[in-house]
Image (cartoon, rainbow, N blue to C red; front, side, top):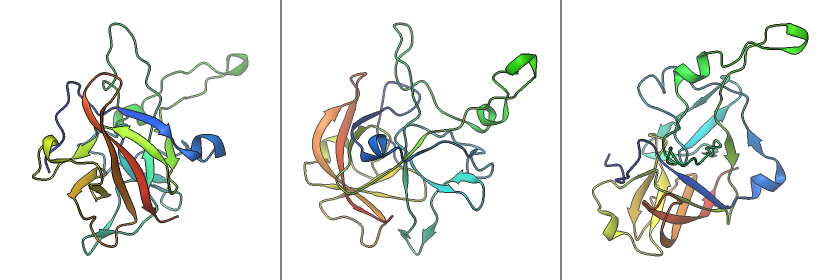
Length: 195
């Protein structure tokens, strides 16, 4: 795996036109799977599985080289401050397990935790991100019309001119672009999705 180079610690996501924003299909009620996220962070721009049966957000399962599960786009709100760049925020096991506030109604203690926001993807959705696995390619190898597909790392992986067959999530490059902090990125359009 070769991550796309960026100037910040974590990936940045810009939602261009994602239908679930309007249809209210945004899910944020499950913690991260402790095994899958023991050594990695949940970054904006990742594609993950919202597994209500297991009660956790987890990495997709690779079935013979293909992902065949419904995928959700991680798009947790990140605020842009003068002294803090976009791409410096991610959700980790520590942030989902630590109480951020114990102030409740009428003085009663109530724990509040940080869970990632996951957006259901639909055909035609567009978003811009630098949270990508470039495989063996360089950023300059990407062209409009090339493909990224979901993998078991939670990252969209560069496939080149032909998408990996059978993946439940295939995105096509529609623009070579930048994310709001100026880092190189690609604007993607969802061309295949299993719902």
